Image (cartoon, rainbow, N blue to C red; front, side, top):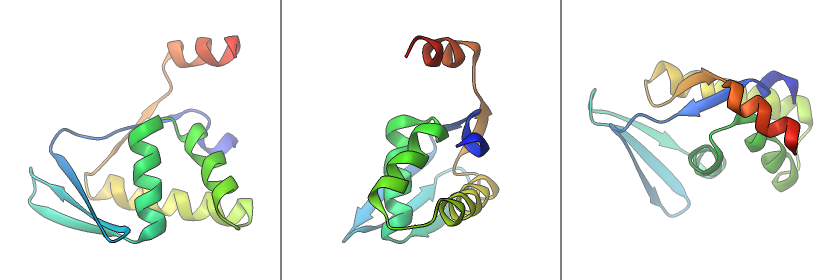
Length: 105
């Protein structure tokens, strides 16, 4: 998905994640702010933690959920915006190394 092709996510060391019954709570130790995620938001967080690259997260979500690609792109973008605004993730551009590793795939 080109919307996410150049993005990577960095989760600050000050952010803690705790899953409870399929939902989760994020705590930013720096600001002492809590942020709750529903089941889908929790899955997004798990994938962000595992892959970091947004272009790897998007197709997994598209495969796992019955959702139109445009709706997923919008919802994922909105969630990322909220996480960035809350200081829970930082969006980073792809590094030259990322481009080289994609070219060799």
